[in-house]
Length: 282
Image (cartoon, rainbow, N blue to C red; front, side, top):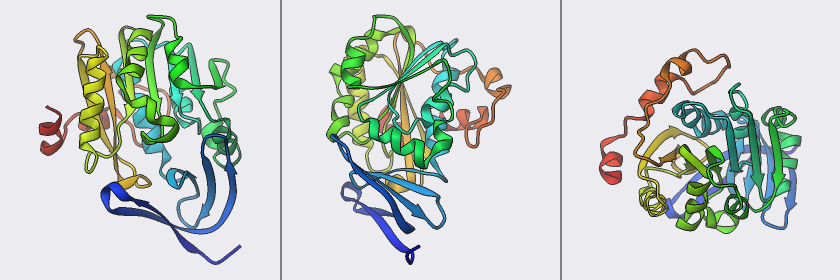
């Protein structure tokens, strides 16, 4: 084991950096799409970087995976058909399959190497990959959504990297139109929406693109995420048909599975936006 040293991701848009003390590099793969690196850290378990950006740590990934999943699934009246676009580390898939009412969950990530790395270095995130309700596929998520049968899905979760490179096409009207068409009338789209502190304009633009695609109700939920720029992240839910975002609070309180961050009270609290965010998002 080598001497510990510091590994940083410099985040130019915010003029800031995230750093971890690491002991060694465990693996590196250049896939056809991106460079994936795994490091062993002194305090945060294993750390995955994609093209130099922090993606997952053993210690804090539950924050992101739980908030990308449970608020949407408890907001929907009865989610049965779920599609995850991206999500190659499989943590979001694991959380989706904790809901016994889900009949099928398809995960479509363009890069098989992300999943292979997760299986090796984050096996706890992949423990539901063999669930008979799960379908793990490696394909272009944009094309997959464009080809989905109209009105066939209850929830679409876009668990993507930042809107550059392979994920760039997941943040525009065309893609959101595919999601809108594939969702049933009471369907919900949820997308990771970056930092409300330094990327509010991106959230505004994303919601505007969702609106152009036909969605008319939006909810942005902030949550802590230490390994991402500023340490504060968000997901944005979109619905059609003028439905709001009341959730099945009694079901959330009575859930039969364990979570580390999500709860009915956390869900309620996340719906209260700080004034500067609420004003910016209208």
